[in-house]
Length: 327
Image (cartoon, rainbow, N blue to C red; front, top):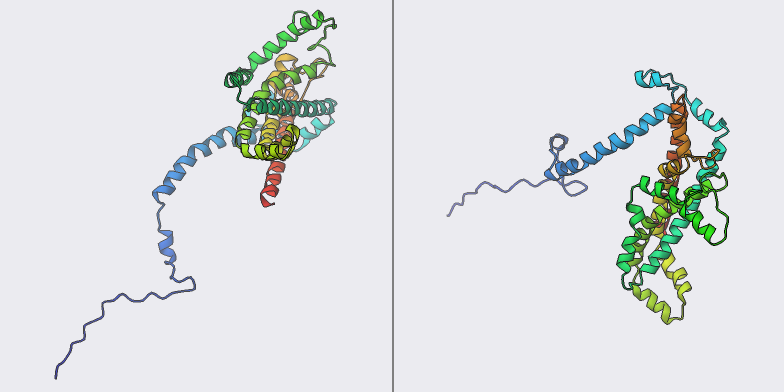
């Protein structure tokens, strides 16, 4: 009779499965888990951006809000012991007789610049999409206003629109039209700075919209042409709808830029004459630094109104984009 020896079973014990199939590790093991190299790399890339945003965006915004909520003078601004006044500076701004004209000028300046910058930029983008000879060279020349320093552009327009020696009035006089006091007339000063800002902003719209047009397939235009659609119908049914996302971000960025335009207006007219071209940007500077007794609180309050306006339009843009993606 043969006897067999039963060897011990060295197979690993079967793990008890839970609802998910595998028992999760204990909490102590999860807490002792160290960050991986990829996580350290992610934090290393995020750290400079976070530091930049805190130093150059978050802290200045905090300081501006603090300025608008306290009664700062030159002495208290240095010593840092300004009394807290709450919303008093904002109420002072709203009750100021200059508030309504500045609000109206800001709205007119922003809407007019956005409309004409977008219209001219879109027209030029469609024009340069034809790829004719020297189109790249001409397109590069149109970028010159965007590349020039703003002080150079503003000074050039100030010379061109000068009432006595400006080239614009010289041309008007040559064709038999009476010269216009572009920069010294309350009726024309706001128009003058609008024209200059449109000239500066058209290249940005041209570049962005031209890039958007490049992403539209040519086969769509060929199919529409075979169906008998003319140029206007192709633009209305193909170009404009497919360009809508690019147009939205272009207008949003243009809005944020136009709301804060200060240097062009200040160099050309200084907000005058008789505050005829004063916007919130120039008014904020005048309140904070342009008077014999600086009003830092009201000046910061006007600046915060511009921040709130840009934030509101940014949130509207995000909401519209979410609805478009959901649909």
